Image (cartoon, rainbow, N blue to C red; front, top):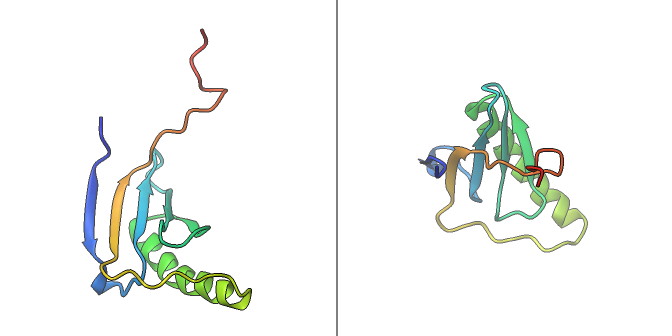
Length: 98
């Protein structure tokens, strides 16, 4: 079954980069990342918590990249926030035995 996706207008949260928030089986645990900012990830206890942490975390991440003289991606022209179900990760412990 494909993951359900919901797009949110990022203008209201003043995002400069796209953000993906993933819901897990635990209703109090969400992960987030930005495909625009390599290495940027985080966790939150709700969608709102993720949005708040991501907004400030992205600013800190970009500042750290600049501080280390690393490439900083330009802000995205039309950033999106996507909320989707987390993709299941198959590990050797959960792989079916053959």
